[in-house]
Amino acid sequence: MKNDIESILVSENEIDERVSELAEQITKDYEGKNLFVIGVLKGSFIFMADLVRKIQLPCQIDFMAVSSYGGNTKTTGAVKITKDLNADIEGKDVLIVEDILDSGRTLNYLINYFRNRHPASVRICTLLDKPERREVPLTADYSGFDIPNRFVVGYGLDYDERYRNLPYIGVLKPEVYMDK
Ligand code: IMP
Ligand code: MG
Image (cartoon, rainbow, N blue to C red):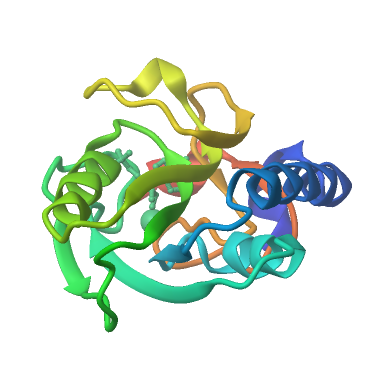
């Protein structure tokens, strides 16, 4: 698995420090609110688990699953909900947790989807952001790291459902997906 990684873009320590900073900011901003943290599966699962353990407020947690990518590294533009929320978000302060903000299509779709359910507020927390790739105008309220336009894996992010369990964010060697 590690042989398929060209370089480490964000190390375990860097992730840990940044997640602590984000959680501290979120804890300040959501004091006295009805925080409801919603992770977008599967990519956010590790980030979400680390982040919520550092948020020092009562909160509800749920997950959604969407698919916008097939086995490859290019977006199709289509977003499909494959697992919906279980709970009602009306009147809640929703914080969407994503692994990466790329074209912005997934989050744009989800924000509109949530707004129709009348939450008190909706904000986005993404671990990674590739601003160069944006196709719809969207900025995250909380963002861990801006990264260049390279395909990355690890810390929840996959290529063809693999590499999610790497503890860091790494750049995948292009030959790994170019042979396919
Ligand atoms: P968007 O809808 O184009 O913003 O795509 C967001 C989704 O694309 C993320 O939740 C990821 O699942 C996937 N994605 C985008 N860039 C990468 C990457 O570099 N590595 C792994 N997955 C990615
Ligand atoms: Mg993915």
